[in-house]
Image (tube, rainbow, N blue to C red; front, top):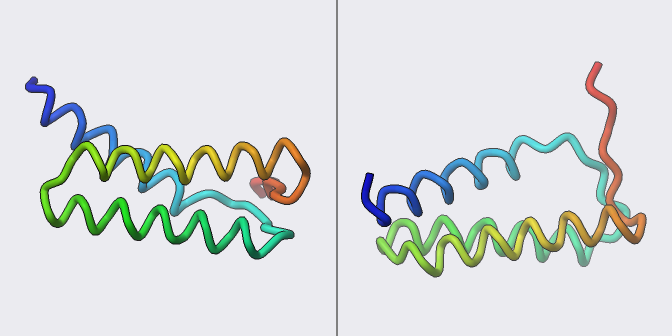
Length: 79
């Protein structure tokens, strides 16, 4: 598998995971930033700019993890 294929696969995988998270966002600034980075990642995928697409989804995950750490994002239980 080429580097480009790996980058594309990883980016798509993490976009899908981010979109399917069962979370409650208590600070809407965090939510807007997460949504913006996911949207930007998709935009760059459409332009075949794989590096920027991957960077954007990584930033989205950073916002998610930081939000969880400081208590403004909570995972909902899977029932």
